[in-house]
Amino acid sequence: MIRVLMVCLGNICRSPMAEYIFRDMADKRGLGDRVQCDSAGTSDEEWGNPVYPPARRKLAELGIGCAGKRARQMTKQDYGRYDLLIGMEERNLAAMRRICGGDPEGKIHLMLEASPNRRNIADPWYSGDFDTACADITEGCRLWLDLIERNCRRS
Ligand code: 4NP
Image (cartoon, rainbow, N blue to C red):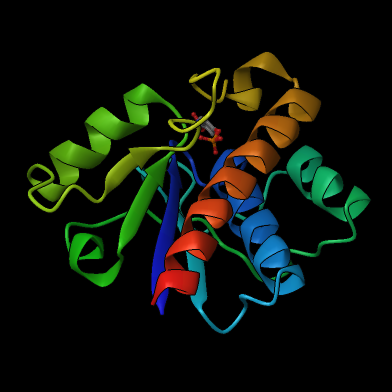
């Protein structure tokens, strides 16, 4: 079982979209029983709040529900609980390393680090552009699942 934690700042826009898109894609590839995915934020600003409505609407367009998801802040203990901690932008990675006290096992990664166009996923909370965030997140999930699938085939 590969345990993945998707991380952004608030855990109401990008990382919940990543969590649910990743799970849906994993299920469709027949990897549902090989991967587990959750999400968290580096800040406690949105603690307990549901997924932000425009993000929820983007997921609904894809036929994906996110009922019951509530924002939480990531903790140092998450470093031991997950195999991969994937941040949406460089700023998230810096905060994740701060929370975890570093990254001794090399588990902290950028969502689009394997993309030919390595980049941050811009925060739609500020940009209002949920279409681009969703497309970028979908690309990232595809790349990570490609990697996981290659490793699963080897093991
Ligand atoms: P997210 O977006 O990090 O993609 O969930 C944000 C949501 C809320 C805030 C910032 C970013 N906020 O400052 O409350």
